[in-house]
Length: 115
Image (cartoon, rainbow, N blue to C red; front, side, top):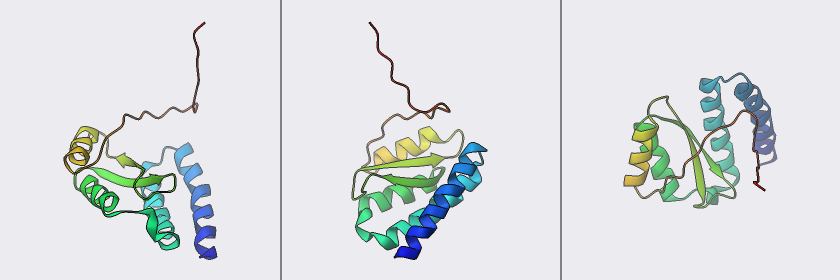
């Protein structure tokens, strides 16, 4: 188990580099690898619905998935091929998932207030 945590930490460092360089093939590969180790450490992190949605997304242009939070049914972010987000979103919705809009920002989160 501790070796898996070490591998997850190594993957996180590699993920930082891949994201910085916008190397989406490497991001997808690392997400798959991280998911393998995380599932081994915490089998309850996934559910049959999460597994189904990941498989469905993959058939429609999904490259990889990242379970957020503690898992177990909360939220999953999907990395999808360019131009396939509508197909993936429809497939997820048709198979019991609820799609929330998401947009990446290079500058990170910004909070603005009027007044």
